[in-house]
Length: 78
Image 1 (cartoon, rainbow, N blue to C red):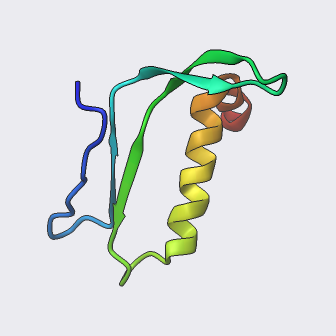
Image 2: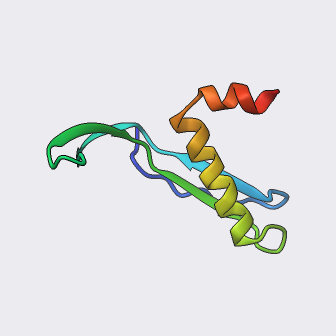
């Protein structure tokens, strides 16, 4: 139920992610009105001896895209 977590690598792991709880927060729309949006905070930890930060960032962006639009997961399965 926490909103934010800190993943900790243990020996033998290359990367780990932690997902917080979904929260409804107010955000401004393009027209200036406030609208509710669902937000989930993610945190990543990676062993930089094995993975470059840019690789983890690309993975994080791809993960975000798939979570925001689950239909993309079906397309990615092929």
